[in-house]
Every structure is written in C-alpha cells, then in structure tokens.
Amino acid sequence: MFDIGFWELILISVLGLVVLGPERLPVAIRSVMRFMNSAKSMANNVKEELDHELKIQELQDNLRKAEKMGMEELAPELKKSVDELKQAAQSVQQPYKKNVGNTDSVTKDVDTAKEAKHSDPAS
Image: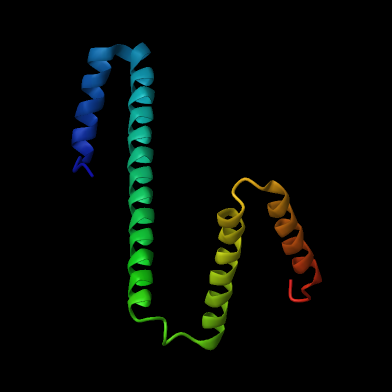
C-alpha cells in the first residue's frame, strides 16, 4: 500500500517520540491502528457487497438467457422441477385472486395443501 522503508519508519518514530512524548506516543499509535483497521474493514465490506451484487447480476443475466432460449435445452428433471415450481406459484396465487375477502376458503386451501404434503411419500 505505502512504500515506506526501514529508514522512513525510524524517522517517523523518532519524530513521533519528539513531538508527542513517551506518554502519548502509545495512545497515538493505538488510535492510528484502530483507524487503519476500521478503514480496512470498511473497504472489505464494500468489496464483499460489490462481489455479491455482481454475482446476483450474473445470475439474473443467465436466467434471462435461459428464458430467451425457451428452456428447451434443459434436462427432463429440471423441466419437471420448473413445472412443479410454476404450478406451486399458481396454486398460491389462485386462492387470493378468487377469495380476497373470504378467509375460510383460504384456510381450507392451506389445510388441503398441508394434507397433500403429509400424504406425499416423496416429502
């Protein structure tokens, strides 16, 4: 980061000792080190957030490419799981579209879904 050699460090330490004195020099060194550590951690957090955002953007781009291809080149297992996810999403949305004010039918749909989950041997 900084190109400081041995003699520069000696000169800085002697100047610090003369200017601050032996009582305040350790406190000043600790405060400078705390500042440097906080700056490093902040830089690392920003770097991690940028990496995370880049990964999310890359996944979104890959998803758009897959949607453009029509998902015709997917393996049969993947097609099946995508179809199941679509059906699950539609089944979740349908009760709320039909019965906005009727909570009893929504409760029945939830109970039916729970029963289907418990009766399904694959789960």
